[in-house]
Amino acid sequence: MGAGASRKPRPLSNPEDLIHGLQREMQLGEGKMRLAREHSRLGLSARGRSALCQVTRRMHLRRALAIGWIVVVGFALVAALVIEILFGPLSLIADAIRISTYRRELRAALARWESSGISDYSIDVSVFAPPLCTYDASLTVRDDEAVSATLWRYRSNPRVAAQGMESFWAEYCPTSRYTVSAMFRRAEQDLRSIDLAQESLRMSFDPQFGFIIQCEDRYLGSRGLLAPATGDRCPEYTFTNFVPMEPPPS
Image (cartoon, rainbow, N blue to C red; front, top):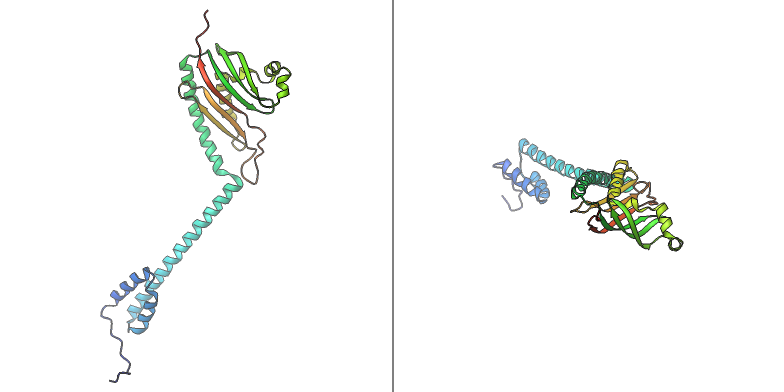
């Protein structure tokens, strides 16, 4: 037979070996073209051709499923991000968890304070409750009652301080609000009445004596971009330089 004569294709000794080999190559992205060439070059039986078609269909199905899952997950992430930006549900959940934690911490802090037996002490307080009560002062407390206060900075309206701050302070911002026991009562009330849709509370406690170190009530107005925060009320109280004192002689 001449050199130009067509050669007959070699019969497959084991079509399944070819199928498995091609499947491995297609997983590496290299077997698609070879699959088409071998399909036309080799004289496959009907069984062999059917097996090759099934391999091809399965691989296309897997690829389509993978792409579908990527699209679904991507869409879900984008939708969650949009919902968080517009309505802020994650911040609401975080604040709800935080409030539950504060309630437990408040009970433990109150127990530490009561077990200390301290009723005479001095403490510095920084009050930011605009528009009137924004000042820094030092309190002296005897028998759990504020007996004196030294105002050393009034931050809101200097004219008020110049026109007799003592009487103004006694009327609108009495020192009785800022003793340790009074702040515990305030914190309990805030934790009971907080509206998480509009407020966010921050609170911390002294690890040794339990008194409140910082308490801030942030008025959000609402959450998310569709209902932007107004921020018109954000009272904050900070307590430092706590010094227990000996009771006065009887």
